[in-house]
Image 1 (cartoon, rainbow, N blue to C red):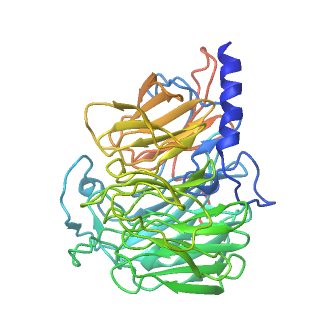
Image 2: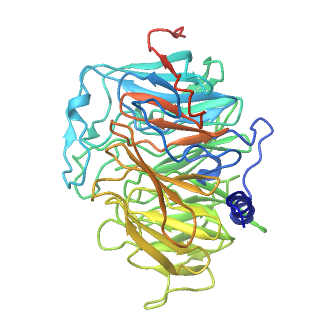
Length: 471
C-alpha cells in the first residue's frame, strides 16, 4: 500500500468515526467555526498542512500578522476570514507566565483595556477589518497563565459571537458590523476553594440551529443559557450548581436524541437544547474541569484531572437521571468505559479514526482504542514543558503545540511515530485552526499561516496592525 493509499484509507476511517454534527447552510466544509472546529472535533477535511516548516527561513510560511495585546482565544475560520479576539492593556507581556507551576494568584492589571476583534485574510494574512468592542478596566482579574480574552468566538456563517464574559456577549456580522450585545453580569471564574483567586473566564460560545449557547460556571449564580443568534433574545436559562469550570459545551446528535453536553466536577450533564431541561448528570470528575466533551463512535468522551479524581470516560448518548457508577464498577448501561487515572487537565482529547489521543499538561501523550479505552501507547513529547493548546488533525497528521512554541507532528495510528518538530519561537497557548491545507497558529504576538509551498518559494506576507479600517 502506498503512502497516498494509506492516507485515503485513514480519511475513510476518520469519517466513519466522526459523529453526526450540526448542519448549517451558511457553513462550508472548509470552515472552522468554533473552538477546535466543528463540534470541537479538531479534525479538518481536505488537503494536509505541512508536517515541517521553518519560520526563520521562511519555509512553508504563507504569512505572518502581528496582533496587539494578549489573548488565549483560538482562531476560527469562515469564508476565508480568520477571526481573532484580543485584549489590549497597558503592560501585559511580562505578567504572562508559562510552564508547570501551582500558583493560584491573580494578576493585578487594572488599567484600561481595549477588547478588539480582527478579521484576517486566510490567503495572505492581511487585516480585513478591526472592531473595538469594549474599553475600560477589566471587571475581573486573571491568572498569570491567562488573559482577558480567553473564549474562542463562534460563527454560523453569517454571525460571529464573541463572549467577553463580564464585558459582555457580542454578535457581529462577517463585515464586522455590531448586530447586538448582551450584558451577562460579573462572571467570576477562579479556584472554588480560594474565592479571592480570580483566574479569568474561558468557556467559548457555540451555535446550533440558530441558538447561541453560553456556559457560565462561576463562583456564584452559575448558569447555562440559550440566546437567539439573530436578535440576542434569551430563550432559556438553567441554573447550575457546580464549581467554576472552563470547558466549552458540545452538541451531540445521536440516533434517538440531541444533547447539549457540559463537562463539570459535581455536575457533568446533558441538556435538551430546545428547553435547557437536564436529561442526565454525572459527578466524580476533577475539580477544575477544562476539557470540552467530544464525540465519536457513538460515544461521548469526558476528561478532567485535578484534585482527587482524574477520570477519562466514555458515555453513551441517551442517558437519563444519575449516571454515576456503583462502587468498583468501570462500566454500566450508560458508561461504556472508564480509565480512573488517565484523565487530562487542560487539553481537549482528540478522536481521530479508531483512536483517542490525550496529551497531559507535561507533554505525556497517550493513544487509546476509542471504543474500548485500551491504552495502546504512552510517550512524552519534549522535555517536560507545559502543554495548554489542544491537538488538531488533518490527513493522518496530529499537531500538538507546547507553551514554548514547539509543534510536534505525530503520525496517526496505534504506534507512536514523530514526523517533525517545529519551533514557533514564541509562547503558544491558543489551539490552532486548519482550513484548505492552511494551519493557522496564534502565538503571543502574531498569527501565522502555514501551508505547503514549493522548495524554491520562500516568499511570504507580513502585515502590520496599522493597516485595518477601524469600525
